[in-house]
Length: 297
Ligand code: ADP
Ligand code: MG
Image (cartoon, rainbow, N blue to C red):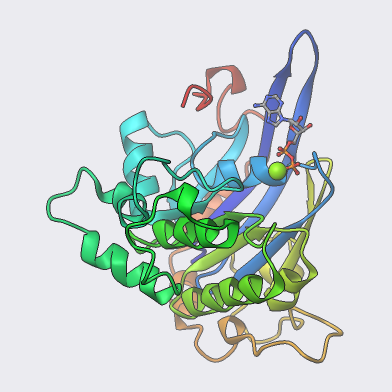
């Protein structure tokens, strides 16, 4: 089962009287547990929109969205907040740290309404990122790279299934960038699906798969290179083409090798998916005008 998947997702923004902007155009996209996907494309191609839709921060205009096999296309505000909190870590391009909170408080923030105190876990995460001596520093007392690492620590505080990062190594020196990528590797090896928007060739080197976006159209969105978003033919049946054809220096792609029993287990109960995928007709998922929009958040 995919950690996160989009089936035929279109995202249109009103054009302010002009033509609407099609930020995502019938996108099929899926990421397996433990897979690290880099999303590349020119400015304005829809990368941030893709992350926002994957991260339940914005809703598709059309199409279907799944989180660990559960349809999360249309959720109430409460359901969406809960699903996001339980399943998704988000590293924003400009960090979104609260300036009056310390590093530990910023990392703990997603747990603010939970019983108990997450300070110890937050401190442990910060320590893991080399910030053990910066726990009580506020963002303006931290460098760009340090703020970035606080933001990544915060994204992990609730043990997400999916980690979404917008330019996670942007503005970082190479060493800091590499330490963050090493951390993504580690998170990935724990079964988290990591999706990073990037312009950084280093990220592409670390990634299992590079997905290209151009004018809202995705190339390479599905593991194994087929376009079967339901996953019956996705990695796991042993005869897929290697993910990174042509490059001899990839880290071994454990996600695609011998440990695929979850996929096999999954394939037994796919009849409902098959039923769904018959209906590619537009409008199957409802009138776009009735789709709740998340823009108010
Ligand atoms: P990228 O992250 O690849 O630079 P974006 O996803 O931010 O691209 O934007 C894709 C397209 O959608 C662009 O044409 C952008 O202007 C438009 N867009 C993004 N967000 C909005 C919005 N909230 N309202 C209207 N248009 C938007
Ligand atoms: Mg962007």
